[in-house]
Structures are given as C-alpha cells and as structure tokens.
Length: 121
Image 1 (tube, helix red, strand yellow):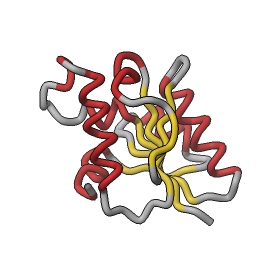
Image 2 (image 1 turned 180 degrees about the vertical axis):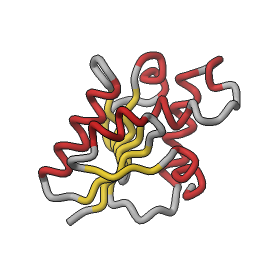
Image 3 (image 1 turned 60 degrees about the vertical axis):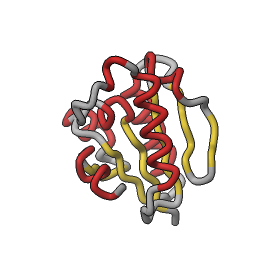
C-alpha cells in the first residue's frame, strides 16, 4: 500500500496572502517546487491545478510529484484522483480546506488543512 497525497493547488496557494493572485502561474510553480523538496512520508503527491495556475507547471511526473491539469472543475479532478488511488488500495489524504470537497472525497480519503501541509514543508 502506498501513501498518496492529493493537493488542491488552488486552495493551498490561496491559504497564504502572499500576493498569489497577481501571478497564479508563479504561485503554482512555487508550490510545486516546495512539494518536490519537502521531506514528507508520502510515496506520491498529486498536485491538481486549474485555471491560470496550469501555466506555471506542465502536467506529468517529476520525482514523486505528479501534476494533473483539471480539464474542467478542479474539485471533480481531485475527487477522481482520490477515488482512483483509494480504489487501487492506496492510503489517500487530500489537502484542502474546502468542506464540501472533504465530504466528497471521504469514501476514499482523509483530509488535512492547507496549513497542516505547509507546516510539513
């Protein structure tokens, strides 16, 4: 069994008032870079990006971080990623403060807050 973290990129980036709204792509790139070097216990980290943030990081895998560009709703993509990992038998955690999203992924995943994730990095 693998330990998988699915990151709601928009929610995690939006949790810090550091000017991310001026450069969404740059904020996504910085989060991706932080996840690449973070000392975590996760075997795989799935970073879901939507909207303008997709311009900051190409989709695909770098080391243990896989970037997924949402084709439509970021939340729907996060649910699909959590479901797929959970159905594979992985232990899944979703990083988001969105309570509705937490409820949607609950059959397959637990959740942590953006601040808890950022504290781990």
